Length: 223
Ligand SMILES: [Zn+2]
Image (cartoon, rainbow, N blue to C red):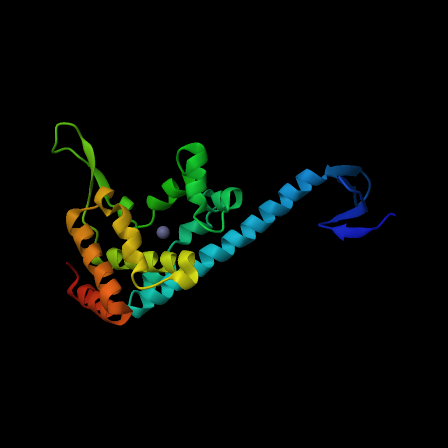
């Protein structure tokens, strides 16, 4: 049976089990194997799902930032994820349950999206690292993060835990994630201590009290 439907500017002539015949408007007939088609559909789904994931995350971070008065950062948070350099990793490595960057890293040994991201987004402690020349053998050390970016990092961690954990999320989740590898993070000691303090407060006393404390720190301008 021959069915004729429009498909992205092409006339789809016949859909068989393993391939589909397309007739381009004005002539030329070509065949796309099912496998290639599935691949195209998968990429399109990945792009859409990734877009939804990063936008959902961005909105949750924005809510948190607004609650402590960080309006500009709330609006601009993670905008570089919409650049082609970062977005394409989402298309190629979309996972659903974890970051596509992790999958890209497993395959290539590094994540090009992450390298692009951390170099531009000051709410990541990895942005605040530098090579120390004090020691004889130079090594990478943490630089103290300004309080406004530390606060945005807290909101980022809360949002990521909320989204990945879903109904299993509790106020302890961000602390548990941090505690798992805090000893190995290259983070300035004062920044690490303050992040530890804030996430511990969240775990023990909840969002209201913790956000009030963050607002106080932001007013003071330092920690
Ligand atoms: Zn980010």
